[in-house]
Amino acid sequence: MSNTAAKSVVLVHGGFVDGSGWDGVYQILKKDGYDVTIVQNPTTSLADDVAVTKRAIAAAPGDVILVGHSYGGVVVSEAGTDAKVAGVVYIAAFAPDAGESVSTLIANPPPGASVPPILPPVDGFLMLDKAKFAASFAADVRPGLASFMADSQVPWGVAALEGKVTAPAWRVKPSWYLVATDDRMIPPPAQRNMANRAQATTVEAPGSHAVYVSDPAAVASLIKQAAAAVGNN
Image (cartoon, rainbow, N blue to C red):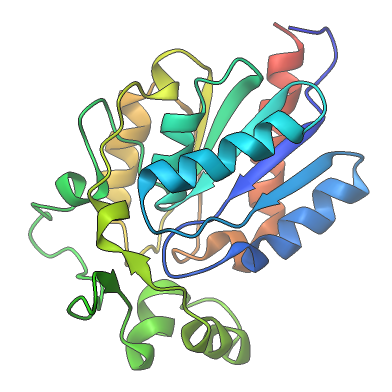
């Protein structure tokens, strides 16, 4: 590893959304001199999304901090073993172990946990109920933007939910985790459990599942912490 902080950041979005939600985080990181790539995953299957992400890693200059939100955590867990990845950052994200998928991780929600308003699959793809999108996914995002996010949803492939990680990056790379304490998509206790299992450096921030949209400063701060830490190794 070089003796300077990693200056390339690759941002990976989750299900139901595209990469545009990273705009606030992107602006902060760019202002601070980072090279930032925003992956536009099709969210059709884990294999496809990993392939797209690995192309972004390959194109980025130097060592990479790989960041995943929500389902993007599964993608970065699988793609993050790439030799160019210096560290992995999870933002209110799934951090599966080998053999786990989103489907297995959400199979047995704890009593009283919020249940995401996922509609029945259509042609193998899932959507969130538009009327309930803001409350469940983006409760602290300004209403106009939350409505836009609901109306511009990207159908999430059932095959992506069922994609199992083979060798998770957090077992071999330093990792960081931001817990969104008001998340109604991935229960905060589940986030903490995954962060603890990964032995991730963990911070907590008040925020919805869309904390990367509503509080980009907190998210960018953790990414910069990760970049500085790997540069000191």
